[in-house]
Figure 1 (tube, rainbow, N blue to C red):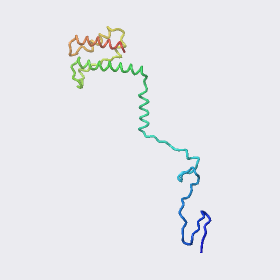
Figure 2 (figure 1 turned 60 degrees about the vertical axis):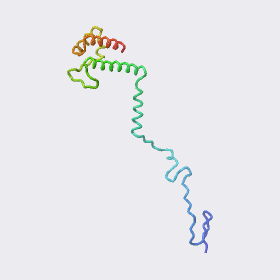
Figure 3 (figure 1 turned 45 degrees about the horizontal axis):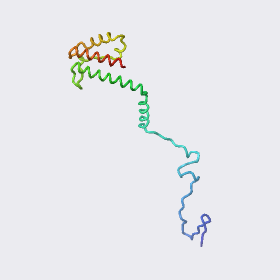
Figure 4 (figure 1 turned 180 degrees about the vertical axis):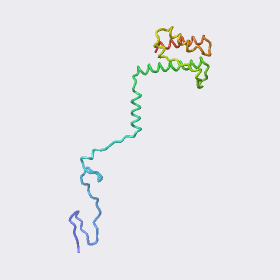
Length: 152
């Protein structure tokens, strides 16, 4: 007794099985896990928090123009020089913490806001009255500081 199968043109004897053929997808553009052609182009791109932070940092570093950055660098150079010279005037070793009795704070903005060099000199002489170095060195420091302050 024979049994015939019309689909695929396979005819088998009783007890024989047809070869396994995977079923074709419902739509030729879709894989078996996709649902419809309308949603095939949709996807969500999640970014890591690190990527967002890196982009934000890059944006923040580009905040100032070249002219503004040059002014900031110039100001920073004067402030670093001022700090180093104050340490020399008060004989404070490099890296040592200042005692509060020796702490002198020279505000460059305050100096720039004063009207004349004579007022600035008087103010600096008052601040630096208890320096450990000789007055000759203090006056030299004041003259250099006033010259550097004029460039800001």
